[in-house]
Amino acid sequence: MSAPSSPAGAGPRLLNPSELGTKDYWERAYALELSNHASAPEDEGTVWFDESNAETAVCNLLDRLEEDGHFDRTTARVLDLGTGNGHMLFTLREEGYEGELVGVDYSAASVALARRIEEARELDDGQGVRFEEWDVLTQPPGDWFGEDFEIVLDKGTFDAISLMPREHGTEPVSEVYRRRVEGLVKSSGVVVVTSCNWTKEEVCGWLAQGNGGLEFLQEAKYPSFKFGGRTGQSVVTIAFQKKSGV
Image (cartoon, rainbow, N blue to C red; front, side, top):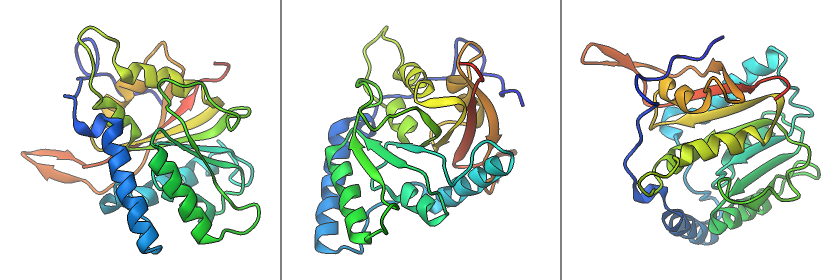
């Protein structure tokens, strides 16, 4: 399948910077969730896009990709960018993903929360999840990187990156993100991005550029709504494939 065409002009629109694009915001947010979990272990914190059943949509999309032969859940290595409380990876364990699962986040409080939840869940030997502090935009991968990943997931991280403060005339951090993500996934591997800030066309405009290493593969299915004579949805999840040989 070919990617949808990018919006007219030089590229997708840029979003206005927001507090949601700052590290301080997420450190405070996850420090609060860490405190809440310490008081009530059953409180595992926010599951992002839960109101849209995004995790179910992501799992269903991954099911279709596996059926099409893109990976095998019993062996695939999975990386979750901006893992938050790690809920997406815990869900994949429940869905039968047996390979190495790694969650990374630039928030130290996020990583501490995810590790504490994993400990509280008392997962069986070999079913654990690895969580590491890492900034996808600025740091080289650690020893958790290994030999690339078959699957790279992003549920809201690209949204937050798109809201980062920026200086006039500097390269959009979205461009930096695209290049870094291309280096994390194996040739012919898949990158699955969930966004509530961008349309399908805009996500593809940023990440599936003609000279880049990713190409549009499939889209998750969400309920749609009509407004002003137009049909749309509040969340999009797009699967990209890394071009063979890249």
